[in-house]
Amino acid sequence: MKAWEANIRRVTPYVPGEQPKSKDVIKLNTNENPYPPSPRVKEALLNVDELRKYPDPNVYDLRKALADYHKIDINRMFVGVGSDDVLANIFITFFNGDKPVLFPDITYSFYDVWASLYNIPFEQPKLDDNFRIVKEDYYKPNGGIVIANPNAPTAIAEPMSFIEDIVKNNQESVVVVDEAYVDFGGESALPLIDKYDNLLVVRTFSKSRSLAGMRIGYVMGHEDLIAALNDVKQSINSYTMTRASIDVGVASVLDDDYFREYVAKIVSTREAFSKEMRELGFTFADSSANFIFAKHNKAKAADIYNAAKDKGIFVRYFNKPRIDNYLRITIGTDEEMDKFLAFLKEFLTTSGC
Ligand code: PMP
Image 1 (cartoon, helix red, strand yellow):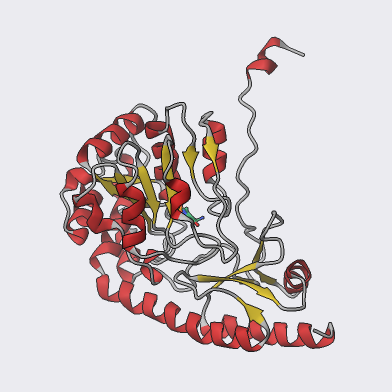
Image 2 (tube, helix red, strand yellow; image 1 turned 120 degrees about the vertical axis):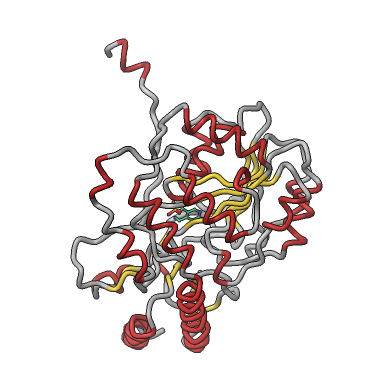
């Protein structure tokens, strides 16, 4: 073995959902939005001449647009390359203690990857049998807390009062609430940033704003937390947000009517689809997100997943303890969900379920 081999940082990376090469598939596996972004986004992308210049390292225009949108001071807003980048920066900046960072055993499976990458100790209290977070599990010494709300992949949202209890009981820790899916039905913890200086609320443009491909995420919290985060980010790469992503982000934020209309569409498809799924023998908690997390009373999730894939329909299956008989199904268009339901009806009939 060469000496340098001992110096390699070895990691087991996060594995995102498949991005099949063929366009001729129904993609219900990565919680993308089935609708295009606001038409204003297209206009914003035409600003090609300006690309010869570096972008603004402080991302002022997009931070200002978002701060105005959420009615907070711009110094409480940090923007990054998708919420994955924002969360990774949060892990590096705030979780440098010896005590374990806490997040549920079933949650966004990138959290433990970042913790491992940065050598951060962590513990994963178990969700209860109904996949609910047990808040008392978080009332113990810790080096930080991360809660996805609505949680993924369960799609279950807890009310603001629940989050407030966790924040209130942990005022010596930074508590991060990942609200990637909140626009589809959850109650945001954002109002709590006025009350607690240890709270960070993370959002993304990837789901409700149809901009997964542009990579824009942000976090809001006390200005001292935001300043610390910004110092770390500026110590790694000044220019993470491209000119295109800043312009597109602003355009999206300014088109609120479009945003609301399409979020409402997805919610209405989700409700109709959920009803049909229950009639087919699936059980699942009511979803507050743009996906459902369901298991069938007879058919095995892995079999459904594989059979759907053979027909060009991609859903997400996690071969992990406690959830290996569940499917996470993203809400697409009405037409896509109808095709998936038609596939399921045929599959369940032919397999005798
Ligand atoms: N948080 C949660 C809970 C997610 O499901 C995702 C999507 N994979 C993300 C954060 C990251 O999304 P993005 O980096 O696209 O903003």
